[in-house]
Image (tube, rainbow, N blue to C red; front, side, top):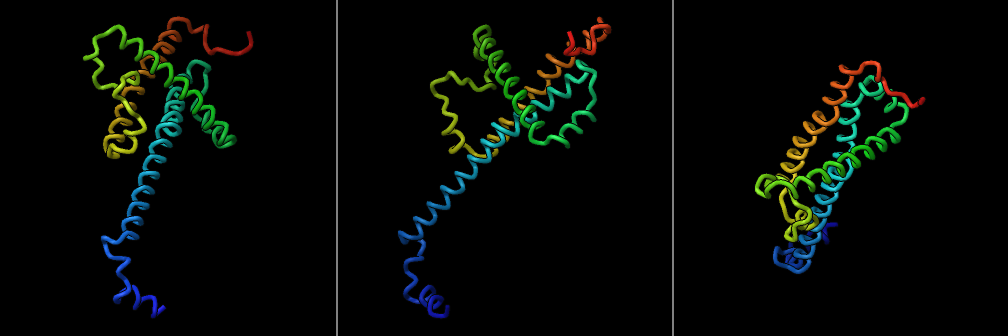
Length: 180
């Protein structure tokens, strides 16, 4: 170990100099590793965590529909952790697809300047994978927060409010059951 240390510290350590090819390759490898971790984390948040959150929020907003309680959902989560998360992820993905279709239809109807804050996936200048790599984490965090601020009131307005109004107007209709 003393010989290795003297080799690194002494005159033989030129290969660890800041401009040496080996050091540049190591820095490049570290940079690619950091980018890979960043993209993996962002994909996990956008494709797994966010849809699960949307599914849970949609579930909480629709509890009155079947006369359920949050305790029942959480006990199901404790008993069937993976099944609960998978079902909420699936519901969240389907809901997100419906919202994206709604926004696409809205884009056709209203002027483009009105929806300036929403990304347009049909835009030729849009490169989502390149954006994952090139844009800083703060911009992605801001997009996720803005998406949350979009989905939370939409879910509340399109699910919770109509269910509550229908329950007030036609109380005999609720709770819905699968036994027809």
